[in-house]
Structure formats: structure tokens, C-alpha cells
Amino acid sequence: MKIKQITWQQALPIRHCVLWPQKPLQFCKVVGDETATHFGGFLNDELVCVASVYSQGNVARLRKFATLANFQGRGVGSAVITHVIAYLKQLNINYFWCDARTTASSFYQQFGMDVEGPAFDKAGVQYYKMSVSW
Image (cartoon, rainbow, N blue to C red):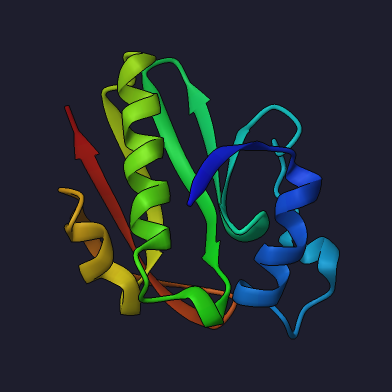
């Protein structure tokens, strides 16, 4: 597996397919994509996982993290998040957070992230704010 930085344009189709297939493609574009850092996980030169990080000062936010269904449960997403965390630590980021689907909270807990506050709704999906500090 190879993990490298990609463009937001490369990330968009994976985001759409995994997170919001019933919405238009542009629904998956995020304000700030042009200045964010985007990572891709590749297996046999195929992009199968994407993660986008939006940083400000010593705080970074993960958004639109998605792994193609056929590759979920194989460690691809975990490898990408591990890579992202190492990258952020090199930049002296000390607070990393995301809005995690409630169904994925145990995944994020593996990386030391804790739930902050009650669940909330976004576009009909339940989320928790989750974070970790170093």
C-alpha cells in the first residue's frame, strides 16, 4: 500500500461514492478544499481511500475520510489515519478533531480520539465530535 498527497479533485469521486452517493458530486466538495491537504491510499496504483485535513494554527480537522466499500476492513483506512497523524505531529499540530459518524466512533477511538459532547445530526446522519490532543 502507498499513501501520498493527492489533489481535492482526485478525492472527490471517492468521497461521493462512499459518503454521499445519493447527492450530487458537488455536495462532496468542502469550502477550503483548495487549501487543505489531501491524502490518498493506493493499492496496486488504485486510489481506494481518501482523507482531507484542514489546518489552522496548531489545530487540524479531518473531513471527508472515505474508503471504497470493497477495501473496508482491510486496514487501508487505519494506515491512512496513522500516516495523517504522523504528518500532523511533524507540523507541531497538537489538537486533531473530526465529526465522526456515530457508527464509526470505535474506529476513531483506536487512534486515541474521544467523543466530545452529544450526538448531532448533519444531513440526516448522526455524528459525534471526536478529538485527540498531543
